[in-house]
Image (tube, rainbow, N blue to C red):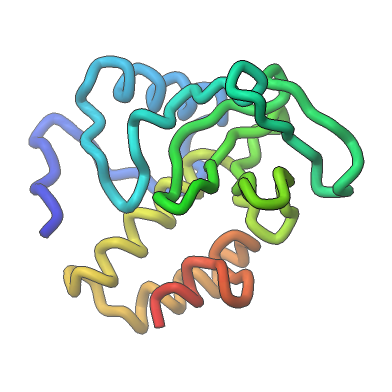
Length: 157
């Protein structure tokens, strides 16, 4: 079950904060220890050093090699794939088997990504109406939510 929203927090909608502000707030929460493991994101994978661990990061063209300076790991999906924030502010999934960031896994920014994950989890837990969450995903049009077989919408069924 989802914990109650702390009294001092405020509601927000995706995109209500500039990407840098959202990332800084997320970073503070994770580093303070206040970010509990939730929605299949594990804090041990936060700020994962790909190069230090012998991992390659290929851009979505499957040829351009990126460095740790190009991505910031914010969590793992539990299957070895990492959610990363790109220098553009977009969030994408790095697939460990291919060592590549696929374009059809991306979200516009951290706010939209986290908002989507919370809605996904609440829908699966029965806190929110599943059909309403599915409609929200379709109206937002985020590739990471809509991707066949791997998007949040596909995982909800």
